Amino acid sequence: MNQNNDKLNLSRRNSLKFVAGAIGTGILAARAGAELAAPESAIAQNDSTPDAALQKLMDGNKRFVDRKRQNPHQDFARITEVAQTQKPFACILGCADSRFPSEIIFDQGIGDLFVCRVAGNVVTPEEKGSLEFGTLVLGAKVLMVVGHERCGAVTATIKGGELPGQIGSLTNAIKPAVESSKNQPGDNVENAVKANVILQAQRLKESPVISQLIQEGKLKVVGGYYDLDTGAVSMVTVP
Image (cartoon, rainbow, N blue to C red):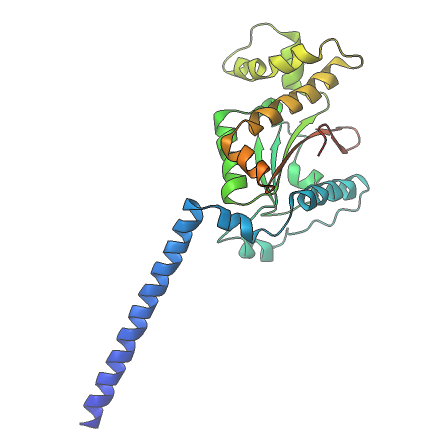
């Protein structure tokens, strides 16, 4: 008789554990869905401010230039830490140029930066959508558009002429910057690169998603210029 009662109690306990587990799984699933439906919760969990995030980027670049890199978040422990979720503190829209590896020049590691790279660092619908996701859903606090010295895409735009394949779509996106900067004193490629950074940053700010985050003080969009000779990033737009 007691054995039967023990078995019954054990069965009840197992059933309760199963129900509790199922409820817990449902709650986790609901939270995950809510994060996508209301991404501000993800932003709230990233406690960095836009100004602090920008400073963190620039401090990292200074370490890189000074040859004092810390190489943070680049071990296997970091891989494990961010395997299930990510909360990058910054988004980078940079050129696809092989000499511009964002994590290295800003001395950051795995899970720190949400990076989009395309020749000429131009804003396409896909790049804009990706950066909307990186800021709204993942909670990045600063979005930096970075152009670089001697950019091939900008140089090709200045030279003009017919280009094969889809390369022309890149130069077409850069042409307004070339036109706006062609009468400026100094190096015409550098001037156009910086004008293009400003142009592409403005195109990002035209996104309703990104502009709303800026208005709420949750995001800062800035522009930078990378010097291939020194490794230094200088600000193109006023923070």
